Length: 157
Ligand code: ZN
Image 1 (spheres, rainbow, N blue to C red):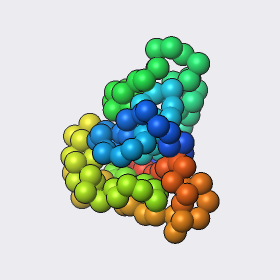
Image 2: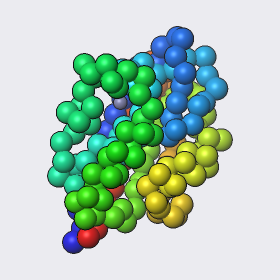
Image 3: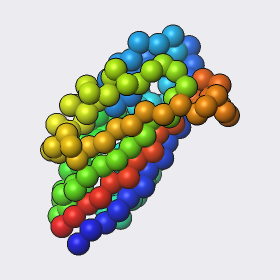
């Protein structure tokens, strides 16, 4: 049996924040604003996993009103979610994802992101796709005010 899940996230780029995407700290003059570390890619993957497994969404599981999740490491949240998914008897078939950012360039960081996420999710690298796109200078992402990510996950049991 297969279950598909779709995840989307966006965070604002602001001064005085680290930029962490896919568990990797990226050199940039701004970082993403959020209650947690605002790892936009990991959040999209978490929501895709939760959606596929028929579980509550990320905002319900890890509310941003809960001080416990202030500056939380999203990789730890991902580990928790993967445990919930496994508890329901699923394994991950594959993940495809996009990071949409006008700047900085994501390409140099993608191999490291894949290494980190594949390890956490017990996946072969070839079953974990992370693609980088710009927004052709259109809208808030194109104006470098925000970074977006989306992900699809296929679960099987
Ligand atoms: Zn988020």
